[in-house]
Image: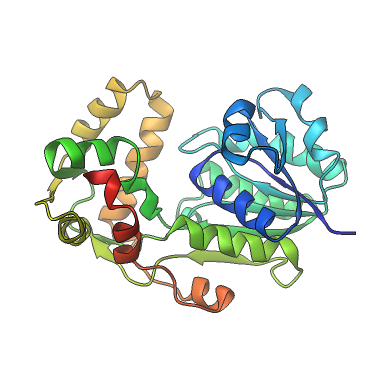
Length: 286
């Protein structure tokens, strides 16, 4: 009998790639999400969709009581992710989940006050087999969203990232590693930092987008306060804004520049380069 795998955050950039990959290999999957209708649009009837809201314990049982393995996706930029997810994690383990793969983030071990670092420690203490994935920033963040809008409308990328480099990783590579972690035992107890094949400054990334689109796209570094105002105008909470600004601070400090070979060693092929991602998605910026 195959392992039963629950993917939380199934409608996000990472979750949808992982679910599709697991389905392509005829694995037994459920898609957990706060947006069941959106999940059904994405996956049709190929997967059972279960409503899962970390803030509503009454949604837990329909998902975790079934699952042998769990891909745990924290809400992005949530400063309260530890408090939000610790009860769900405990519930899953008490319900019989035997292996948890946690989607964390590169560099969380540098700042032990971060919610994701606390969640990693919680996972290590609950007495279940576990794997931790620490990806760098996704290349797909340049896709649909405010960055793509600015590129299309203004021909620029405005971020408080200074002149430092980032080893952007393709979300498909992260999903591929998660897939491998979920179907075997060789990744039990391991933490994997996942990056792309090389680090790029924002100026270099903008140059690649220029080459691909045939347009002039430039990087415009901005101050943190400009980013704060932008996010406030988009309705972000203060906590999420501070978490995002901390991320950009880590970029400026060079913490997002290191490159690992983890993706290639696990998947048996080179990590996807930014140029490939850009060519395949040029329509986002036309």
